[in-house]
Image 1: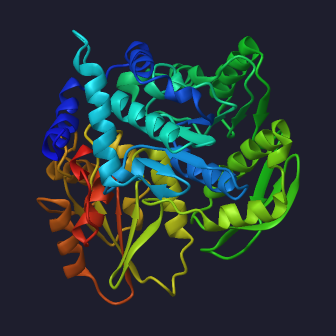
Image 2: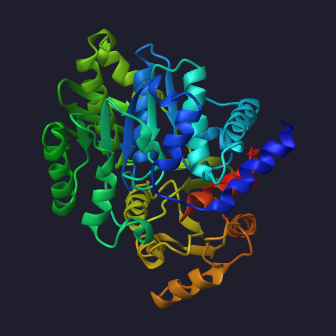
Image 3: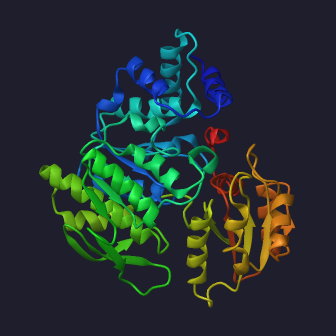
Length: 439
């Protein structure tokens, strides 16, 4: 199959939109030889922190000498970010080959139109099988119960912080959303969860009771606290099956302490179940959490002028970003220039409220994506809550405007959506591979 044909096929899948349910992915897996059964897995769901937590788990597993896979979404710049083996992104040729293989498998089936995410999930699992991955960390795309990734039978389920998001798909209450995310819990499979609101924890606990699944709760069966007083570098003290002191994290932000604790606990459970993996655990923990890299989360993408990006796309994530910015040393950054682009179906006011008070200059932009809110709409919402702002026609234009406003000692912060920060990375020179397939 020609390269151009395969690219056209991948882009064409987007017209099928999002469809929830497992019938298509079950059919796909059957056609491809059930690749999801070729590896052990850890399944990660949640509203915030699931990408970072997944990356930490994979990094920890890799230090134990096993061949790892990592499947996440969406990507920021290149489609290849979604599928990794032993920490390395899949190459473009393999993407094309896998897409062609899936397309060939479904081409003879009448009235079978898998969605983009179903095909990408199938490509990831097929790649893991071909690359002889032993352990795969799989991040849920959206929700959990009816997500295409729920075809796997994991050894551990991890549920990160749950809040209101994607209400149009997952439900109007925290209980409904939690129910969808708890849908990845399997019979007898241990569950590791972040600290949750009482209504969310009640849903998770009920599902665990029904499934006979042991439940490990942050701040109950395991815990972690900040160990360093440094305003930017983060280290933690952990207490679980093992105790670790002053473990440094490569990912910035106080919220990463919780995510790291979830990752450690998940690997502790795996190590207990498979004792041959429990080798020099203390050293592995330090190396795994010190080496992990995860783009788009408090990531400095340029030094002059300094540009920090963060994919805060809902109110809890915006609050976490705000907390991080408030802890930056005043002597280091004089002013904050904020570039913001948000999807129209998000709680825009909820995202803006924790951020705008910190900004000395605000520039709104609309990323090149159908669901994006217009810059004018964002400006109107900001004005309604008392903040003046500027607008630009694109993320690239907003960055140019921010740089024109920049003075030595300022910090430019780009946030509001993964689509926004992905376009920001492209604007400063990061080459995209199938960048238009962000979703």
